[in-house]
Image (cartoon, rainbow, N blue to C red; front, side, top):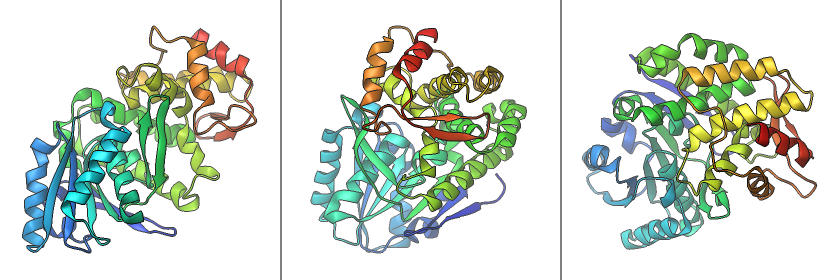
Length: 363
């Protein structure tokens, strides 16, 4: 990316998403959102050795009077628990964080979700700056203010809406991102084409090689378009009372897969890729769309090297039981984000469980 891009998210708590290289070393950009003198720099054991010292040094150079403490989680979804949340709260207490303190979330979606939730709860809410270092976090979890931790019964069951004060997506970090994590992020990128922008899905198919080869221009375009789509939806529906639910396309299936594998199998992006294909197949089975649309989405995901079939060892009945506990379920029955074709997602309530089981068994 040759230049930075900036996307404004409006609504009751507006903030900006800045996208570009070198942001984690930019003293002024890092310090601009900071209102107080206490910073908790939250990261994980993979990301912290690469970037934490540089971020801390940049903040201290810009604001010499600031105290910066570090909090490092073991890397992986298994750390996104109430125990990990409690450890983050303990770190804020040890810091003596005041109401104008700020949590900087440096890492992928696990760090962003957990650190954001800690910021939402400390003294009933302090600032959080998201510093996403994975593609998935840049285009999804860092934007929109949804924070949470997992329970053994399911993913993201305990959390809060807490919009960030700023998002700084340093695209340079994608150079150190493992290939598997890059592909996982591309699943969430493809989601925006699936739910609102059929032309974007065509663009992704045409630029798949460049994205996998980490070409700056291709990644910049994919991130900016994804963030713009999410920002527009979040601004219109900040608390997921309506349109924002469309962002969960594939996630009801995906979260059940993750929980069914005890968060130790497919990663989030991979599970969502499978979930989107299952949602597309369910849409076709219910007569809302065609199998040709599902085939087209599946082909794009396969070009990115993503899984598109249910992993072995997962019982359809057990997955269905987990879906009943999903946050998108309602008292009247299962609710899914399905589609009427590519770029035309919609929420469908009271989906018959027998149809869901049929799709799971076929997969």
